[in-house]
Length: 157
Image (cartoon, rainbow, N blue to C red; front, side):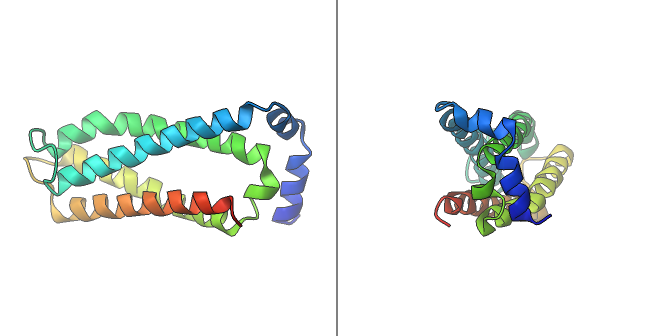
């Protein structure tokens, strides 16, 4: 079964019909998805800013990680749940789309990098982040921005 055939079959499922059959579900889920994206991106920017000593120097990178990472993990779970609902709601629009596929590929890189960053922050000592942690934080911010950009392009392809 091709990806297009799978998407078409999923679009005919009761779950897909239930999602698109109610006018309020897709915009509500999209709104929650966007808020969760904002939380992940904002947390990543703050962690990167602190790693480069641009913000929050009153707390150590480790303390910032303890403060922000739990909420970022919750936001990632929310993104998984809402993203799944959006895919089920409009599978032919999402699944075969090259920007959707690019977004998913980048997520497969971003999540392990976020886990690696979390581990590095948990083990960090002192007020300064080391070079690897700084580079990792910067790459992660750029990757989240690329994921957001790819997601926006899904609507136009």
